[in-house]
Image 1 (cartoon, helix red, strand yellow):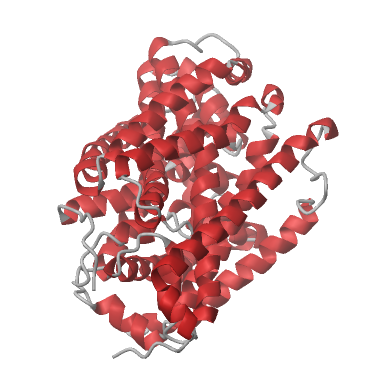
Image 2 (image 1 turned 90 degrees about the vertical axis):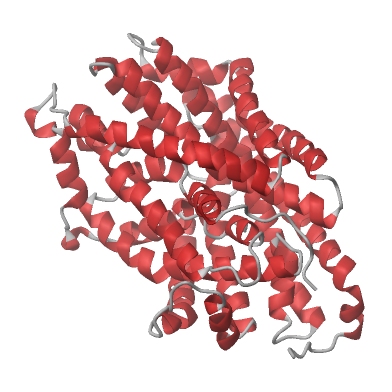
Length: 522
């Protein structure tokens, strides 16, 4: 029997929430510097290939998983993976996949958000700094170092952002999350369109060849001969990050659907809204604006693009305080609407598995994120902007574990659940008929593509020294302890996630685990 759970109040609320989940810092900050670093137009070719062969198929997989789990009262991945795996496996073997799914989703949503929330806090702070002109006339590098060195100020803007997240999640899905995104998502699009209009009217006061239109040309001129394995890997990784795949949060939101609610068109709409925000809006803001003032090198600056390079631009731009405030407010909105989904995943876990009330659970999650986020705020390498603790977590959690979980998504929801069952679930209550030629893409191409991505990423990580005791990127070995702190935190959270998933599955399905008989679907 299906359990009574909170539901989305409206279809538009669901779509905006899912779009907000996908639209985050990856669209307006990570996408521009990834595109710039990997050759602009040479990056966009493998990007669109990965979107169609990976992004859309896995998005449908995760929507199906979420709705299926929600039918049995589950918004977290451990029990959902167990239920789907037992279509092919005995319960005790299915339990292994349930533990893996629960462990990975718990770890990603916990660890990724622990540092992602700090970047959201930086965006809130820079919204204020832009509006007041605090960094105008100052060295933008030193200003950022001074800000990060002021731990009280960092925690203040972090606290404001996370407290608002806690309020929204504590109010529930329909009365909290849905109401917040119905306000924030339209404002996000308005802010983005304002900045696009401004970017289209920029010449370059530095060099004529650095106009904003040259920035568009750099991004959209297809350069097939310049495509490399590195750009292809970066593009596929960006698809995972930007669509929030491999995190468990799409499944969490989809779990609040009814058993016959559409997932086919809804999943496609989520991808479309995200890509409009990323490629059309995100690609039309940071790249053209930064290109006009800084040239090609200025837009491949990673963290520095948002918090060093663009502040330099706003200082010299007419009405720079206004447009700077709009830019950072846009980043804050984007980050907030993504972080709220990860916050809700952990709150739902406490609510469903430990029977803790939603409001109390939201407070517990706030405290958890405060504890796990302290190393980001206290990391002494922030004085040189190295941020070793954050870098190590982002390399493994924000880039690697996403792909691992994405592969298990397909293994469980398509292969163990059985392809014909998946196809049937995808079309239950569907507003569109997914073409038959998509089925082999989901069944064969997407998992092979994901596995190749994982293999080559692992190879690159070995080459780059990520498996060393002291990674190659660590310029000051005396700070390597912060890398090991990040590794220790990952190991601890993975263990906790595995234990939690085991307890959640055992608690509800202990009887059939004891019998260990294959479940026959009637």
